Length: 392
Image (cartoon, rainbow, N blue to C red):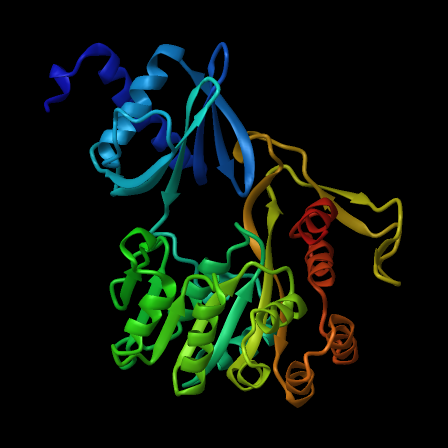
């Protein structure tokens, strides 16, 4: 339909959607939230993991905006009482295609709309993840092994999938067959085979993983270990000559191992298949345009050890136009890495309690997420508040 022939309200919705997405892209936002309130429609962008208020949109345009998105995402435009989701692409007026995932949710004042911007062009390279050199070398070695199981863990939004994509960039895909199973496919990688699970059609993670094993894979990426069946198949695949990478919603390496054991998988399978666990969080980077230095008023502790004594110089955010008044621009990773050895494997086989694993971490001087985060505070990369926020 030609733009000039659209009805005025519909034309407004088209303009509002394009302008909103364009501003979100310029701000580096990951999500756009359109939330109907009693007297106005609130718009917020998620920038570097934090919600940032934007100018509201006219109340009368909101229903047309939601309808516009539903049409583009092939949702049922007449259904307003049930949640819906879909994907679509915007092209006209943008430098490149913008891929978006849309989700609607019925609420007291209408329908809330959330748009996830799929930054397909923003792949993060392995050396930009934020690891120290020693951890990078060890992780690279494991990711390039011909077989085994490598798992990243952390809460939702901690960058686990981006880390796995960075691992895939290390692999020579011209000589290695890489197959993924994701839900949804966040970034399209044209040198590998990507599959998207669909529970409604019976294409579950477990069913998809069984099918992948018949595709002669060398490297398998499973978006998430959602159940015992999927985890069991993935670990068996790692034992039989495949390199398997996946994620788990656990807080640290110890909890990850305990969760795998609690799923009911034979401990000896976990012990022999698992190569390493990488726990991670994302901390916001202090804006270089408005940062300032201050001295700590109190000691900062990690358990029973002082990591930063009072009087230490640290950075503090202020907020400016360049960082949308947040004081931060961009994010970087904080990582805790546990590589399997004979001692850890023995603990797994006898279903040891978490304190026994933590004792091994202490003896091996493996730094905790908070300790690694405070190293970035000392380097002037982020703030004490940010590290405490993501490691509490």
